Picture (tube, rainbow, N blue to C red):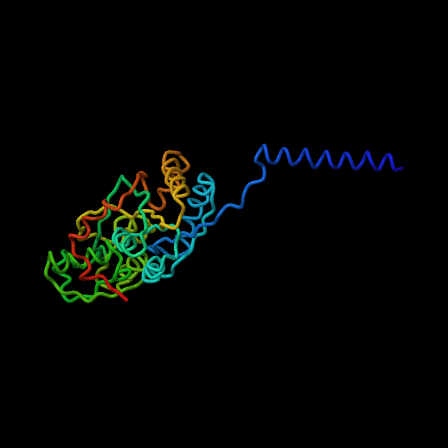
Length: 284
């Protein structure tokens, strides 16, 4: 009986040693992957943002070897407070936001869409009697939020600097709400950007008409907080660029919308300073 117990004990020890050797040599035991928070400027409602960004971040994390947790912001002003406080490890934000984020928290641009530029638009109902911006003198115009770049800051600058007319601004939180307000005749006109207009259902787009387009600027970047380790930041950048080259990745990113992924730099956004948009930027 003692003999069998000794043999059994030897077999157990051998099994444990074998497993240990396999695990250490083969790398089957992986260190716990770190989870990084990601903020996305709420141009759309939270359900749509989650639907767009969850699969992107899942695939990006798989390639970069880390996990991402999408943290929603109910409004653009809430999103601003959160990135100014350094809440997000990574974020997708508008070009004017990145100047503020870089100045306040040192956020670093990683990638952006190289295929298209950002510009603001002013829309009216397709059957509206409004033919030009001049027709909106004294009218209520809806915007997503005071500091939405193309939809609010750049269009308000155009009303002021290009057309020299006064309007009554009203803020309705998201781009989607802007288009609905105009379609439902709650406002004569609204400010948006071409990319978000293209993402609206056909029945909404078909009832709207663009009467003005602003100047163009480099589009939204995906940025990293400086606390993210350099090695991780590089892996995320490389993984993003690789994702943009695969057929599956292109389909995912197109919904953001990012049509052609390329590296982004803070210098891409310096021209915005010449527009003096701080005149319209709402500070807490």
